[in-house]
Image 1 (cartoon, rainbow, N blue to C red):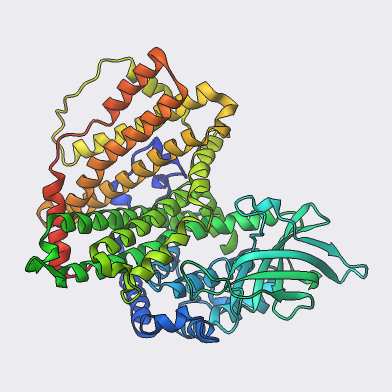
Image 2 (tube, one colour):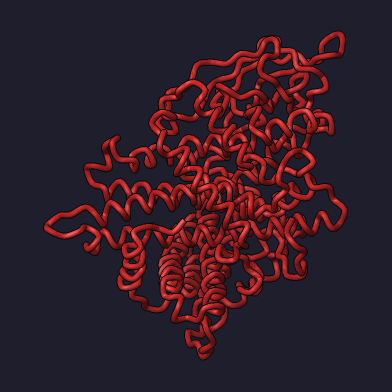
Length: 597
């Protein structure tokens, strides 16, 4: 596990909105230790040697191929990174397990299968299972001998998971739960050996069960024909008087939602990691195509429009990486803190992930949308060839689209982001009232547009601080004006969520750039500084737009005018030549002919 940290510097979930973070304390991708870098390299080598060369066979759902690849990954320890050694795992820290998700994220359908197996297919049993359940299932899941899956979604209950209709009733002899119902969109469902399935006991007690392939009354449907991730097994599951032994109840009766929602917190962060890995590989594919493709007797990588696209890919990828590993380290440190306080490993990680559920939701949204952006622009760089199945970017484009849907749609995650912040504030876990009142008073003061502080990054730090004030102003006014009605104002909530996502990303990028500048010197960080400053420059406009749309939706008259003036003050960025910055960013990647993994 990771070493203990000074917990005085560990922010609570959502607390970054009202407190500053120190660059020195921020974990960045450049901080990987030697072992972590080796793990990441091993993942890349596995994809290059065992997955990418047979990607067409995988997409045709060749019988037995995906299970054999998962078993091979298990032999190399890629299924057991975060599983304790007592259950046959490697017992590595959360950063390392996140790196595995990123490193394998560029494997198209294989990435989906392995993420489902190691995440929702294994973790519910690992974290909520009895000692006997863990001893029976986890070693086989860790080695890849058995494959895992997860059954939550039903034809009429997607985001509304608790609306599930699948039922379970104790048999007359008390030895089995008799399960009846249907699950859909089940990843790895066609070949898995073990399933975590959710059902309502006696029609109202939402609970989880461990179901094995071969249980009487359990069958599966045909493979679904999907727009993307065609090589990922996706089937429906049917339960007709299925006999599930009573000892296969997972967790407590009526507490299935705790399992479902806690596992999703981890899954959302890990999805961002996988999307990041996929985005890096898609960017490399597009850069290499741009370098070799000639039009008008020159490489298209020499054109400003193409440079802009390559640079924008790089900016979004680098910022996503900054936010991801900043958060992953927080989870890791919180886990260490909870274990030091006497919590067992399962409660420690779940508690840590729950603490940063806000950040996990934001990462899921941004990571999936970064990948969507990168593959979309990748197709555009390829031109007509990008629309051909002969070029792998078309596969990346199709496969990317699912990421904005599963692990909670991006709309749900945006709403959850604000909902969780407000609930923490109401419970006294997050002191938003004081800072929000301070911002209100500042709005009444005469603005000071001067900045006499010439310390390094003073202007950038001031800008990020102002972004946070914009969030507090808009969110505080919306809550005060709408009160309980705010729950039904989803458009306003999503605007506030987007302000928060942009701000968290901007601060994460700034902290990373500051730390690297301190370590290497500013002259050696041209790429990183260009990325950070371009992102902040654009974020100011984005936050202004999100804030303006929210303000105009719930206010009018003098109140509206005052807040719009305040928003303009808080999102005022100095003039910046983003064209030249993007050209420098693109030039670096074009010269290296890739985005570094």
